[in-house]
Length: 333
Image: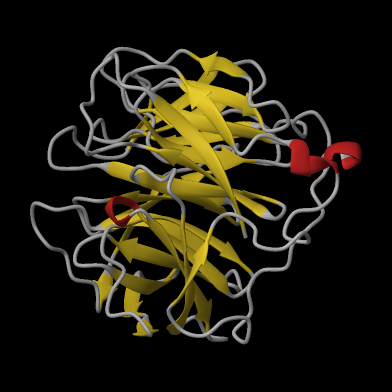
């Protein structure tokens, strides 16, 4: 692993805390008793308390530039969504209150921004896809601060990232290794080979979305094909397959969002979000409901803002050309 730029120092909090005057009324994540297994829930609220407060007027759909090729989305302490481009590695920021946005990082030809997460200090950690990189960008200035070359540029795909403890953990969809990148301080990248129950299937995307376990001591990783969830020990890399109840698999699993012991799995080409209740040890998951929406067009990843999930439509089944239109959508939790 190499560093092309010096490591950044820790940043101040991005513009302070969330604006209370614009905040959504916080929703409660679905519980194990909230719905029967396999229930399909339309994304449009069916009762007036699903969304309350001034944020009900916030847009639930916003445009992205033609040809942007979005895949990742992240939201920090304020109501701004950051989205990465597969076309050129650019990052765009959209104000959730208005739906308006602009490019904060221009990227470069031959690079990509796949999954991304914004830290509390305003640093964006960006998965570089086939380029094998993890980049750190200052979300306030748009300045590229650090590039970590995690892998070779062939046979790998750095796909998604989660922030946990003192590291940002990246998945490689084409290899059974996670990479722990230091968060805003000097230090070495830590490779974490996956073992135990982990099955690496050749020539398809394996490790994709990633979140921390509820106790913060491990990771949950989705393998897109054939669609399995794994609990990964941070110390050893030992992966234990999560037993699914109410669902045979989570095929096409992409982005993950965890709220308490509720796990949201975005299944991209299936145009749905499967909502699971995790047991206390995060070793089993019970399907409680699914979220669908007619606006879904191969959504890849999701990010939470209070009682909404925001997703980007990657539109993998549409032509991936400069004229293709793209957007982001919001659905209630």
